[in-house]
Image (cartoon, rainbow, N blue to C red):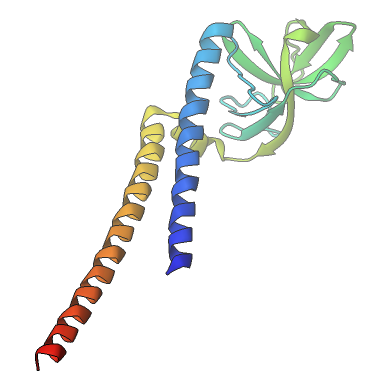
Length: 187
């Protein structure tokens, strides 16, 4: 019985941590985007993003999830993310000349982008997870966010209800035992 209580307590702590992280990172991201104007917020020098266009196909497809890491060491051939205006661009570096970087999308038939300053690069793509972006887009949507919070709170409530039921069963067993003892004494 003690092991079960430890498990329940641990599950509650994990759920509380998940809720706190989701809410905390969401508010951090929203505020950081507003304050800095940067569309790719990197709280731990790494972040994830969903690719919305096919400019990097076949290397990176629409709705692929990319993991981006902040670095200052770029070389020709790196796939990088940079912001131009209010749009994030994921393209490959084709040349570097001092502080000036030229990029191009693999699926853009060799068309080169306008030159950018190397300091405007947000980070390098270090991993690509095909098709996972659709799920992330849904979870980042208001409905997805509410779903995560609702499921977490539901699991928390369910955990407390189960504990209450177990306590009630234990209490009922104790009452039955007391009644049996009373009946034995009265005989």
